[in-house]
Image 1 (cartoon, rainbow, N blue to C red):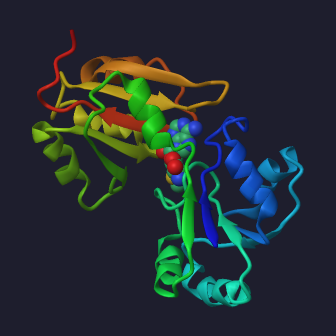
Image 2: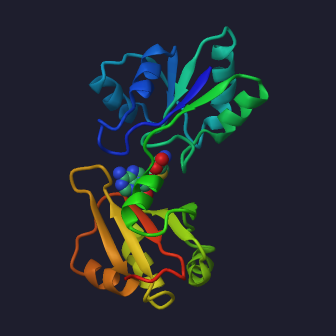
Length: 224
Ligand code: SAM
């Protein structure tokens, strides 16, 4: 059995009892950066063999993992934060396991997408998650398409491009409601809510640091 285990996105207490039990029971853990995963495992006194899998070595590691599981063992797949595979590596591995008839189970838990959506105050019944938006090619088209968005749009954006993003959105959707969620579940958690014009003006007074999720209201949503 292979368990896809969601882990905290900041606050290390955000881990389910089941996730902890599974991490204790499996034979080994597949992670992204072993230094990050060790911090979590040490907090809960879990000592396991770690295999690092990332975008660069995923294909190469699949054979090794299949061999290690061939005698019927079990393992967990975790990422540095949140739910594995959500803008994180692992899809090739999970696809190969399914093809090899190895049972896969997912242990739900934190993800920055849903945490941001629920805090945004914006419509949450239906939404589109875009992962990391294009940095160069396709970025302008993506931003222009927000004019017509009929559902809430959520995406991840790097700290280095948050200000640029607001500058790019300003002429396109100046009155649209947005929520910028920063450092979710951490000590410095903040949500900046308002129109694009308001948040753009506010950013001029801030030092921009941390991890961000951007939530954009659909075109039909009016702030009351
Ligand atoms: N698998 C993760 C999940 O389930 O949310 C996402 C991994 S992705 C590589 C990392 C990005 O998620 C960050 O650059 C940021 O945009 C967002 N993110 C992760 N943790 C966050 C947090 N605590 N606060 C705000 N954004 C976060």
